[in-house]
Each structure stands twice: as C-alpha cells, then as structure tokens.
Amino acid sequence: MQETEILNIHETTELARASSVLRTFPEVLRDVQEYISKNFAVVLRDNPDENRELIKSYIGKYLEQSSVGVAGMEQEELCELLYGEMTGFSFLTKYLYRSDVEEININQWKDVKITYSTGEILPAKEKFSCAGHAVDVIRRLLHKSGMIFDNAQTIVVGHLNNKIRITVMGDGVIDKDKGLAVSIRIVNPRKLTKMQFVEFGTATAEMLEMLSMCFNHGVSMCITGATSSGKTTLMSWILGEVPYNKRIVTIEQGCREFDLTAEDEEGTVLNNVVHLVTRFSDDPKQNINMVKLLETTLTINPDCIAVAEMKGGESMQAINAANTGHAVITTTHANSCEDTYYRMVTLCKQEQPSMDDATLQGLATKAFPLVAFAKRLEDNSRRVMEITECEILPDGRRKMRTLYRFNITDNIIVDGRPKIIGHYEKVENLSEGLQKRLRENGLPLKLQEQLMAKG
Image 1 (cartoon, rainbow, N blue to C red):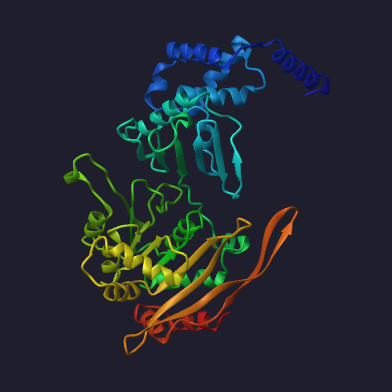
Image 2 (cartoon, rainbow, N blue to C red; image 1 turned 90 degrees about the horizontal axis):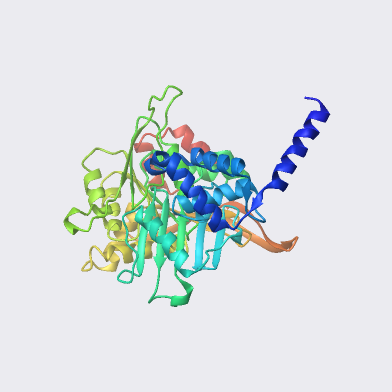
C-alpha cells in the first residue's frame, strides 16, 4: 500500500470521528438496546457470555453506521461499557473477564478498587451512577448463581461461572447511602512451570522437586498462608506433576478452580482426574457439602485427593483420609507452618467438639507431616517462606524440622517502592522415618540420595 493511500485512510478515519454526533451514554445505551433487541435478540438471550465478541461487533457496527459517540470515550471503550450494561454487569464486565485481575472491591457505589495480579490496587476509571445502580447490577450478578439480595438477606455469598466468588453486604450492615459493599474474588490460578516459579523467586527448584517427589510417593501435605499468597497456584503445580496413571480427585467449595485434565492434540484425555464441587440447595437434605464429597471420594479408589481448602468440618474427614493411606493435599489459612496444626485442631472441633485438643493435634500431625508456608511480601512478591516436617519421635513426641526457609536480609526502597532482599536456605533433610516411608512407597534410593545431598 502506498504512503499516500495510508494517509488518506487515516484522514478518513479522523474525519469520521470528527463527524460523530456526541450524545449522553444513557441515550446511546437506549438506542443500542433497541437495535440489538430488534435484530439480534436470540444472540443476546441465548448465552451472552459465549457470544461476547459477536454482540460487541454488532454494537460497534451500529455506532459506526449511526455515527454516534460519547464525549471522552473511544469506540472500543464505549462498546465495552454498552455490552456490560446490556448483559447486566455494567462496567464490571470488562474487569470480570480479564486474566490480570484478581479482585474487585466495591467499598461503596462510588468507590471501586481493582486488585491486579501484579499486586497493584488501583481505582476503577468508571463508577456507578448512584447507589441504586450499584444494587441493581449486583442483584443481576447474584441472580446468575441463583442467589437473592434484598432487605431480608443483606449478606449474600454467591458465585458466577464457577471461577468468580461474590460476597455482598447491604443495607442494615453498611450505611444506606453507600449502597452496598462487595468483594468479587476472581479465581484464576495461573499454571506456572517449575522454571517460572524459580524465576519469580517463589521457591527454588530443589524445594519444588522435594514437594512433588513426596506427594507422588504418598506423603500428604498442607500449603498454608493468607489470601493471595499463592497457595492454590503452588498446589495446582504439584497436582500437575502427578503421573498420569494415578487417579486424582479434587474437591472444592462452591466454584471450581482446578482444571487438571491433560489432553493430546486430538483431544484424547491422557491423565486420570475427577473434579468435584459442592452443591447448595434450599432443602438441607439436598445439600452436598465438602464432608459428603470426601466420604464419597473414599469409595471411588483415589490415589491422590485434593481438598481445595480446609475451613470447616471437612478438615476432620481430610485428616482421616490422609491417615488411611491416601495422599492428600490441601490448603488452609494460618500464619506459619507450626500454627497450621493449631488451625486444623480448631477446624476439627466443628466436627468433633468432644475430642480433646491433644488427640486432634496428634491426628493432624500424623496426617500432614509436611507443611509449606506461602506469603505475599510487602513488595508483592510471593515466597514459600518455610517448609517443615513434623517428625514423630519413637516415644511419641513431635519435633518440628525446618527443611527450607527464606531469610530476609534487608528491606529497601527502589523508585519509591519497597523491595525485599533475601535468599533461600536448606536447613535440614527429611527425617529418617519419612525417607523410609518414601522408599516403601516406591521412590528409588538413587533419587532420594540425590535430593538429600542437594542444598
């Protein structure tokens, strides 16, 4: 294409923009809704999520043919907002389906903050027009998961399309003029490779090899830490390293985070995975909770069981499963490796209130000898701060062995932002008892010796 032709096209585009009739957003929205409903109602009604790009192309076509626009908005941005309003989620739509967004927090109708995967928390450029607008949008969002948000139910927990968790608090819990407060957690565990974990500084290759080796040979473990510390991402990688001939069953609450199915280019499933998720029902007898799923899982001959998170009575069932020879991996919220066992005892009390703490802690430490503590630091880096083994001594006493840890040596400011300086250190090897167990479960002695010699 000649340079003069390129210039002519550019000038034509600029003239088209300049000749657009600028109108208010509500006016354009009304006309676009009428146009789409009249000409493409089936596409909008059937499944707007799957037809997202098609609907947006229809909107863009209308804007171009009608030569209308909104002041301060590019056509692509206007299409996105119009699509969001028409499918029910307003400007939230553009954030709900982005791969780099982890959380949307609505503190009040005019204050929306976006948490990105980089750790940055930035205000959204857009906001709701009023408190009522915010309530209407969130009601439509909850409707997708069959949840009702009204004066009778001012705190509601729901989910959208399996991958999005929603917690809403409304009038009576917060000030009426604020509309509502909402936390929308977008569950999107990244599938990182071992090399990426190492490059990001999350763990060393040796630490990852040790966790994978132990789980693949029957040693149960818990990954602990706060929200957004990287627990699920690490757990997903460990499960992805399980040999294809072993049967994995994942158990999750409300929405499904894991997608471990491996296929070849022709679509043939290569591994052996069953994904299970709880089901809520207004009739308590029809509820299928984590405890029920765990009980059922033990009857279908699993080699590995993944309990997405222990936060209730399912903790007792997970401990029982791990103590009956199954390899179980799970996560929970705790402040350190040692605190994890106290957390497990507290959770088990919900299922077994009459059992004493010492007995429960003995069961927990026997079930999950390995604990990895993950943390997101002040500079937004994610680190496996410590990996420990709870060794059971011949006299029955427990000894905490620190296998690896991340040592922080300094905290500095670079370009106005904090930066954590530190390094990983190998402290001890696995106990003789756990090494013996790994050999009994099929780990070649040569591989074990190689790993024990590293550091």
